[in-house]
Every structure is written in C-alpha cells, then in structure tokens.
Image (cartoon, one colour):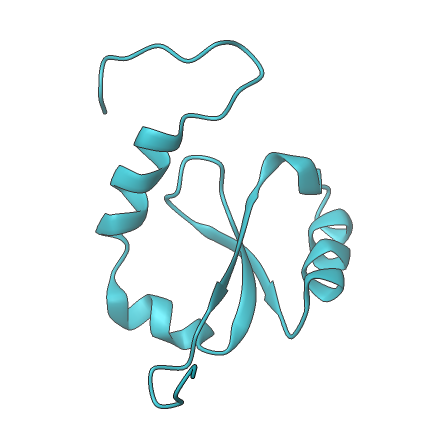
Length: 82
C-alpha cells in the first residue's frame, strides 16, 4: 500500500486502482456483461447482477451499505461495444 493519506470519509482511489489492477483477469471475466460492486479497497467483488438495482439489493441483503462500494460494469470481451 502507498503511504499517502486520504481525508476521513473519502475513499482512496490510488489504493483502489492498485489493488484492482492486481485482481486476476480470469476471475474478473466470470462477471462479463454484469454490473459489480467492488470493495472500497479494490480487493474483492462483493456482489454482481444484471443491473445496479439487483447489485444494490444484494448488498443490502448482505448488510453492506451501497454507498461504501465502488460500482462498475464488466464488458463481455467477445461482444463489440461499438
């Protein structure tokens, strides 16, 4: 982890990106064409679903505050996005 400080209540984007880049690509591809919720530190995928509402519902059911995660969409590498 880096030694920079982040104000309380803010998420550490640099640490998130550093950890997210280390996430195994073969694991990430299990979520192709889905919305996901990353842990705030970028080390884990907490929930996934076809849309953000489904992901949020799963987070709430798990007792996780949706405002404390990073949402992303994982494109399907076999489908053109253009």
